[in-house]
Image (cartoon, rainbow, N blue to C red; front, side):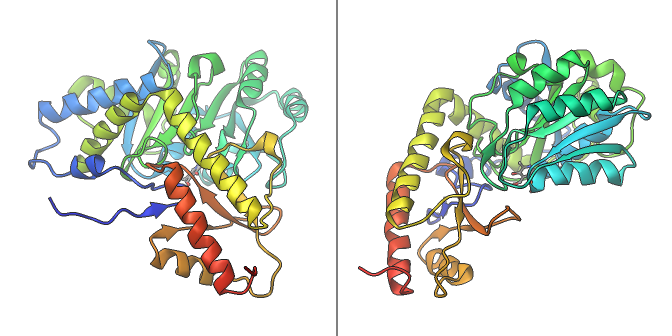
Length: 370
Ligand SMILES: Cc1ncc(COP(=O)(O)O)c(C=O)c1O
């Protein structure tokens, strides 16, 4: 087996993966229409539901796509023709869901919040009262733009009162932050293979209430991303409709096994520990953060860009990249930021080593003095 260097990815996925997940992709060639491969996908689907404690009430459909494809599948499949979708837009990924809906001609009621501000559930209620033709509400659980954790439980409770189904983008929280989808009562939850589940990029999954299946039947908007045909097709044939990324699926199977071996609480504790070490180390170096502590997801930190004229994100990135650490730029938050995430197969010592290299850069660039 070829040995590869371990890189520390502090971008919010695709993440640093274990060697065993990487190695899981080296498998015998297999036609994905074989029963053996169908069994693998079936076990993946079942376990993906277990991660969020969906029990028998929830089912999963897989698509070959990045995360955005799953959002497209959920939104275009769920919203009936004459209905509207209310979207909480407090980050680039809320905005993306609104863009997806508009692209397909779905009417959007947008609740725009500055990127870094917490959405007001009372305002969501007001919008639901004003817009009786809203059938679905979409929200990002962990908004990766800023690191904010949106109040999904409160939003789901509210939506229930109005008979509105909730679509939750859990791209960068699923398998990182413990989620109980039944307690939420969300209609749809979307995540991808390459974030906190710690697999490879290439697959996205929509976990949804089984009871919603009949209403999805006749509202197909997209050929490729139709949730109903993808789910029912697999049930009938044990195959995905279109060519799956075979090796990515083997890696996902291994990543799920490693998730269950680590355990929900241990993974969350590891991420939190990484985040706390990162946070306190950065504070010591003089950095300030976009969000107050109570809104932090503890998966990602949006850090205010230093005002020093010597600061340059690209130079900092390149310095760290050459030393094995990948950092991430900002994405339209209300203040200029760069971002660091702790998701993936990362440990306290990785974060400590990173902080030492970062300090090295700040000294080298003359942003701080010894
Ligand atoms: C919250 C959220 N939603 C959606 C996406 C889009 O995923 P992808 O880039 O895999 O299409 C991302 C990607 O980082 C994300 O963090």
